[in-house]
Image 1 (tube, rainbow, N blue to C red):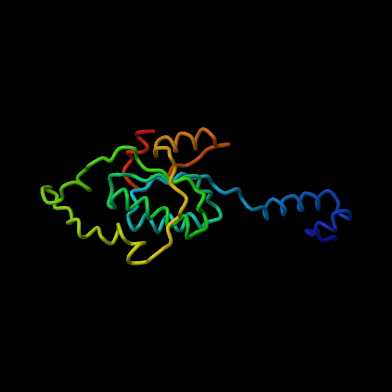
Image 2 (cartoon, rainbow, N blue to C red; image 1 turned 30 degrees about the horizontal axis):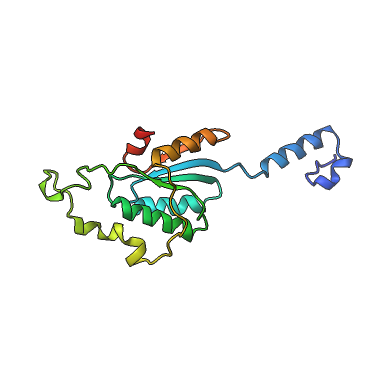
Length: 178
């Protein structure tokens, strides 16, 4: 019995069953299209690790990163950390935006007066300065987007050729504003 060939150069010798096998083999070897994603983050340490992973994963196409104002790192520090990560991992042109309004919540407001006993601001020093003090990383000299986080989300979704996932790593205030 003839053994089916999977080598494309032998396709001229192939009968109908061989051609079917060649097509299946070629489909199996295709690299899937990267999944488009917008990352919305409050830039805590775990978020930074997720961003590093996603910026380096060939199956993910990060379209934009938006920074929340009401999470564990202060907005200015979170924005700076994201800009450093985009530079370090070769995605310096990736659009990064932040909320147009700084929202004070129980996570970033006056810590001592909250009944839930959230940690004092000194505990946040590691999150806010992780990529400047603890692990010095070069800053991306390209400025962040001139759009707000909500505007960047909307524009990215409108310009997309298909579906874009929003990966919400922090509170949903940017998503709600969009």
